[in-house]
Image 1 (cartoon, rainbow, N blue to C red):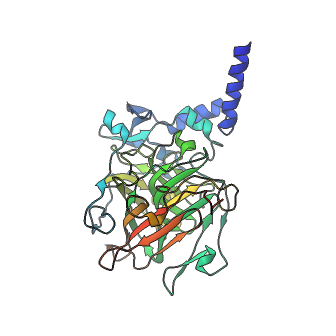
Image 2: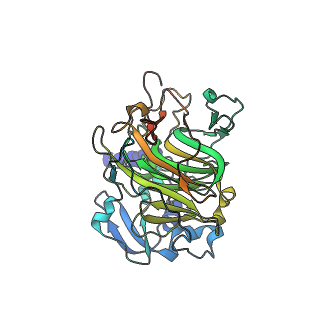
Image 3: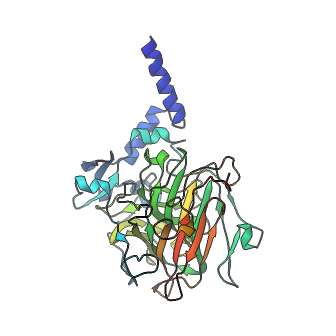
Length: 416
């Protein structure tokens, strides 16, 4: 009798802590929808299972707009990048290249398949709801009426150009921003860390955003315990049409992103990680627009991961109007909530810590209609909560290109 009581208590506790998803039939149906039949499965030493799924039977084709979609195996355009490696703190010495995932030690996927991280039952039980799996919403956005940079609602790119900052509920970001043109590509070397994430519902990322209004495509790394069940650093891609409310998601937790890579899996663990005062590692993230199809292609290093099809996008089908490089913390305990979350951004160090201490993004690049890969003509750094997280576009001297640093500890003496 006592054992039975303990079992029931633990089961109820699991359901409460997981956010309340307790419909087993609904969970089973969702698992079947997300986990397509695998031609081969690889068990990673980190506990993940990577399924090698037929490229023509991937989750993307559950999207109504993609029912008759023809897969594009590779981009039909190319831009000559001006750099092939990251550099450290403006010097000519490259940072250590990073393009490995833990599961690759245990096997590889065959031709004609894509590498997909398997979603587990416990992943769904942690979700607040299956409807919002892989996104933050629903939530409201706030935009600005005050025209000063200090207000945190507008930022001046130059004397003539000011950009309205859209602040999203639950998000606190620090980034380098450019605007004023139509952008058809962006890239950067994103420094990889494993920041402290305090609460199960929190997450922290280092990433690049391409935006047009409330639409965005994004990519980089994140630590997201609620979504993935641990505090490991993982590769991610994301899209939304309405500021994270009812459309889009992270990775393949909803239909939309068409994957072409059998070598890298969205949601899989990245290694090695940067160390405070020690070795630094980064990943080259690039997103490019295909004018013919309206799609946005995601590249990580030399690998083409796949694309967000133009048929699922609206304004972004033409171009982006804002590009951001930096970090993002999601928590219910930001922007006026007390106590503030202690979830860190980047390395957890302030941006002024610079090389080997603060998180960086090196060689931020854009592509406009000139079709040239170049440093943006105008940029500005911005942090939504200056006492909690920071942004600093550091230039060693006029002889060196700036390196953008970002990050912070979250809750501290000034950020209570």
